[in-house]
Image (tube, rainbow, N blue to C red; front, side):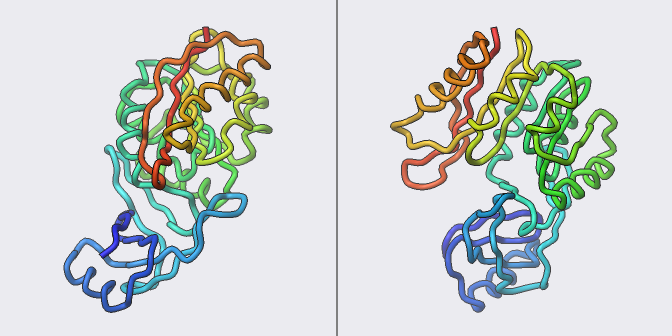
Length: 249
């Protein structure tokens, strides 16, 4: 059987699975209640998949637990990757006490909540353009009883300037095209800000992430230092999700 992702009690297959196989999987795993197949790749403004229920309950909403955080979400209406759990915890553990943190593209609130639950930030701001994901993020903040998370709905290019605030740490967990938002992120950075820029790259092209950062910092007249490049998971043969950690000097 092909590999699959598990989000809460939903199994998600990238490739074909028969109804018989899906039903057998549900019998084998009591914790699973729904088996879905991805029928269309991530697409559209909000980078959403198309999913078809193959077996089990006819729903796509679930509750997922990760790194001390509980999250409700609809796996078809919100972009979400359970494969980034280790990366989210890595970032949370880097956050120092009393830091102010900005999470761009915060989705259902997973980065802000994992940070709030695993470190001691002063405040975590999250910005998300998908109204459904933002609605879940607000619900999840309540569910996790966190008082130091502020969530905003809208385009980061419009919301960030309105905040009129500089942050100690800025996360940019956009799956594709993050370089188009480096300029607005840098406007919210100050000397000493740590930034986490994500990109999908061929393993031969990891230096492209550094080039994109260099170009944006040069345009913004910011000095910077690359701290490290981290592989956050494989997307395809030789293609990795990479996080470039860098500091504004």
